[in-house]
Image (tube, rainbow, N blue to C red):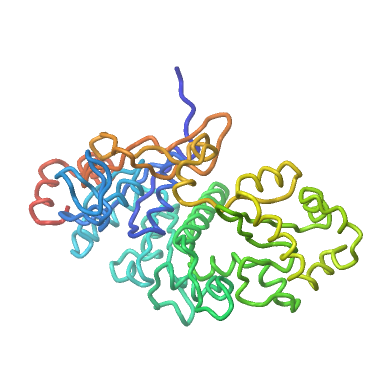
Length: 412
């Protein structure tokens, strides 16, 4: 039976990334069918191979329980990838990297700006070797500008991108979003950039340099904030409110919390119906969103009183039945056990590089659903250097004798 090619099948990607943002980008490209070749330092490999939490035959733990245990970050983020080892601190290793770039479509890296140039592998050099190559650089602040050389991890991206300024509660210190949104949204934008460059290459025959900055992406996440702020309608931090709707907040039930968002007057009317408060339909204080905004505390007190007398899931059932936009505030345990997410394949089991399943361990599934030809991450993370022989033979023409010499010299 003939199988349908994956969307990016035939695309070859050289993965020079580390930590989270870069590997997350290449993981998605790999899941979409690209041949992603992960370049790791000889001997020790990617930092996450040896970093807690660990997964192994006995499950997940904060320490190694067996010799087979591997860092869960590697097991999770290196799915569907190949692994080669290459010492990029040595001139011969850098020369070999340039040779590999002659026969790849995309290179993804998240070094500090300028590091590739120091290695003799900057975009201009790579373009001279392969005019079709697409280089995707992911960094904190981009390849130019006054902050170019600043170092950044996720909390720095959230701090300088405006997310921390709008998150949290009054009279409290700035709050970082609990999820690493700088490190996870930035690579999604990088994927868009790579795919766009590939489409244009199909027209021009030439590659490009895709420059994606964490700070840019985080600022890009603030469209409504910027719009309302410029209109003088928004105060920071936002707490759980939004000036575009009232009520728009999180309310305490007897056993948890419910998030309710009424954007339109119709939403408000539906909420009144669900709460059996038809007596307020003609109350001029609440007729339009502008009225409700001026009487915010009163509106929220009415809703809070009703929600506070019931259990969380009962409130959600009533409101969703009345077409009111709402949802339960789920614990992480509830998210991991969500029937909705499980049905959509968002928490598949994780395998060790050996192919053995890790007991009670899950990763994140493919967030892009294809109806005709469904996709999933269907290959375990590779062993360190597992694909050295095949990749170096096919891309660099290196025979076994030469590869053995490179190994003995610490190059691979």
